[in-house]
Amino acid sequence: MDAKWMQGGGVSLAALLPGCRFVGCDDVVAVRCAAEAEACRPGDVFVARSTDVSDGHEDVARAIARGAAAIVAERMVPAQGVPLCLVPDSAWALARLAHACEGDPARALEIVAITGTSGKTTTAWLTASVLAEAGLRVGVLSDLGCLDADGTHPEPADLGRPDILARWLRRLAASGCTHAVVEVSSRMLAGHALAGVDCGTVVVTSLAAAHADAHGTSAAYRAITGRILDGLAPDGCLVVNADDPRVRRLARRHRGPALTAALSARADVSALPVERSLHGQTVLLTAGVHAAAVTLGPPTASFVRDALFATAVGLWFRVPLERIGRGIEAAGHVPGRVERIDRGQHAAVFVDQATTGHALAATLASLRRLTSGRLLLIAEEEAATRLDPTLRFTARASRWCNDTLVVPATVLAEDADAKAVAAYARLDRMLSRARAGDCVLVLGRPPAGGGDPADPGDDGEPAAVGGLAALVDGWLRAAHSPTRGRRRAA
Image (cartoon, rainbow, N blue to C red; front, side, top):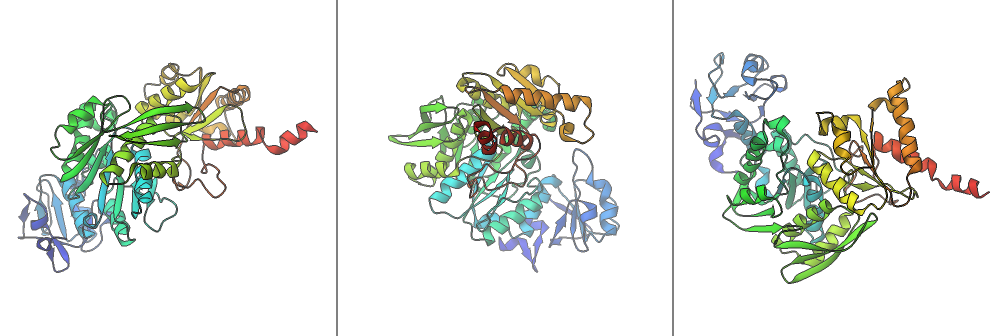
């Protein structure tokens, strides 16, 4: 950390927060900070910030009662004699202070930040696999979980909280990581989670019309996503999706090094299809005059696109293209992201955890092109409602799907109602009638407990799944078990 921010083992707010003003003091030295009054401990600096659900300025009295030593706020509040620091943006101040109190661990790491409407998680894990294949010690912080240099299974973490993000970055550095691949959501950017963090590489996967529910409008969402460039080091590399005009417009703001990746447009990194079916695909990664054949398990175009982003990052770090290909192949699949379930059935069955309607549409479009028979969609009710609050999920899915079933959460409850019983009966018929050439996409919650995206397990089985995915997996196990087959033969 810069010495000017340090005073007596703490952080000087006067030096750390530009444009701040003090009431009742000339400076505040912080050791810890808190954004919730209930979490305040004696000696903490309480940062009053406004969110969608509350205004921290109304909690100042409770924070002081719990021992807050100073208050950071955007406006004058009754501080009861406790030092008050006024800032233009308390959310930015909170994030900056959180990183500083942890010793600014990002400065010991090469940060690769990945943002966009869809593809962030897959790109993050493919990128980590590429860098690990090059011999680098890589940590990953993603929606799927967090993994340091010594970890074997990703641990869940709320990276939208700046203090947790800073703590994980410190953990990565302490475990010996030299590189950190960080999935950055629009929620994180809205909260300035990367305040004070210099990213050596930034990847923008896409900027579709999405997340209006969280940010008001699609334009506001794109403006918030554009904040990722504020954290890109002047000499850092920007990796962009050249197929997306919104991303190309965003990229014009960056004057430093840049690499483009695309499936259709001309780009620095691209891919030529060699063979593609529901069983997987082989593509030829191309970068300039170099090319490398790569075999991918998921058959979707979006997985190829995400692999191109990982390839571009690898090239920026001077990893040979053939080694990049090995890293992508070593990653295999990412749990819950178009993950295959194979229990010996004739139809292809995949589990997906789409986070936006844009991502689901891309997956369905890819599967439709590869499916010679029927494309069937089985979705958890919660997922269908989240992706389409207008309740037109089934109608919209019919653009690609021959049949769509939305399954209520009570389908396996002991006291299941008539609607849930009818849904299970229909699910049973759909799976029973699925034949070779058909494809079933199960849309539900991500794999329970995480799992290592780069390691499907010692037995080669798919990662453990929960909810609807577990129900379908159990049905397939029972319907296609070896024991059942032997009994038929007898």
